[in-house]
Image (cartoon, rainbow, N blue to C red):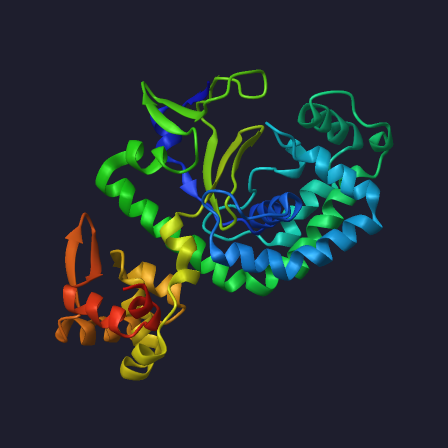
Length: 336
């Protein structure tokens, strides 16, 4: 079992970070894995793979050396550290992908080979004994970012921001033990200032005392995650909560769209699980004023209710709202 012992100042100074590079690395892992048919994957990820997997496989087939590099970098139990650096952004500013990927390109060839020795758990393939590995890793990540992440980034960022809002609310209600324990498999708060980061023991998952470091929690939309550290930066990369990642399932039935209008109907459909105004703004892409007006109309109509939870006000569907959503969905009639 690997754990980090975190002092109070480190935990108090920790923060959630949006990282385009982490999202791109997670997407590269999903493309390399080639399937979303595992627990936790959602329809959006499967559709995304259908759209981009053929081009990715064609690219890798045309460049077998880079294909070998990617396979080697994502080992069974560990990633090559140089390809998963902790975010380098400062303050509340989202780092640009172009600035983050430079760190990979500037990795020394010696460091890249050392990291790969750990991820492959054995001798380094002879074909990887070369000096252009960091450049090749940066190039394939730039391709994934441009072709398969950037076109979806505004929506993915909204999902990530909504996850941060949800985690922050969870933190205010249940403390760190509640907020951290369901972030990623094998991770939970042990007490005694210890955060379990994995159930696996071994030299790649050492228990560490990490006072005075910069601790970051980095949500990504593909169903994957990892931990990484460099110098005084430690990062936990974790998948967005399923209720948020599954918004592709929040299809707005056409009759409901016609009755309430697409924007207001979309808000009602999303309220199958309680959400705050901030979450709704992030998930829908609508402005705060627009979401507020939709909520007022739905409240006045008795289709939703609200309740306070810590510092947040959460909205959720009433029985009347549930019945209206079901009535507007022909699939529900067939299922019944």
